[in-house]
Length: 391
Ligand SMILES: *Cc1c(COP(=O)(O)O)cnc(C)c1O
Image (cartoon, rainbow, N blue to C red; front, side):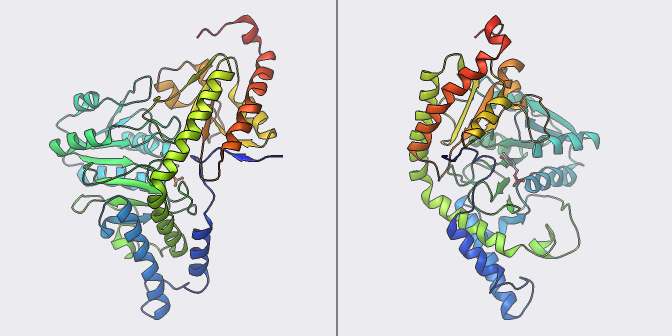
């Protein structure tokens, strides 16, 4: 049976070049980067090369890159660290309703500690309005945290405009760029970004490694203590093989970005067009054009997303739904709900995220099996027969 992986926003396979360089640092160059001998110096060299590769991709300085265990930790470090460092100045934070849980739940935690958080709404395409950000700013606002591209519906936010606004008001600006890093051009200076989170396993690097870009002069309290690594901001012996792999993955993503985006956009649009043409009662979620080149998110009315996923899996297609999240709950996605999509329709949503391994044949296969699966599920749906959901 054909196997089609369409869940690249959840994670990606590690590319062979990355495996190769990691292997070298797991075996020959295994030293502790803090050691003064040649083994340590070799590891240190790999670490610093990776820092440069990552800095180059976002036009930062290497000393502004701090390695973390991933995007989640980088988000925590940015938000909690900024809150603690600035609490004498103010306790108000602005974010959006469609952030990743790593941002939302960190903000909820800060609310318990006495901070106040404004969760901005979005429009029907999941776009945040710069005007609304402006209106939410208060004298005690210390941080604006906004994602660059949404992980569920792919909508790309007006980061540059919000960055200019934050700079004008002297507010720290954090961007969760986990879904855009290596996929969209980023210039932290042009975009006035003070803090930026990135993760390796979304760009064909290993899991468990990521980084926080921390602009020189931005005050952030460390969350961990006990070592001088990462200039005391993130102590603990560095995961050199993973860091080296992340660095190479970032460099290669940058080199291939334009070409890969062009290729994926064609595949994405073919998949979207095919679905809209072949299947009735369906809607595209997310911005029609201002979206990631690899993201397709659609809702099939009268269909239950989980059943759809299982049936696709039986046909070898790996995708993700907009309902059950990692917690295994059947709550519809907070992103789809924030976009004003009803519970019923959100429950029938499907996310397919494309990547390097996908070909046009994969898309054809998908368009071949999907209409039958949807029709089969609808034939079993009492809602479909009663026509309870209207368009
Ligand atoms: C995957 C993801 C994260 C979490 O990154 P990890 O490295 O898996 O911890 C954070 N934000 C967004 C937008 C993501 O897509």
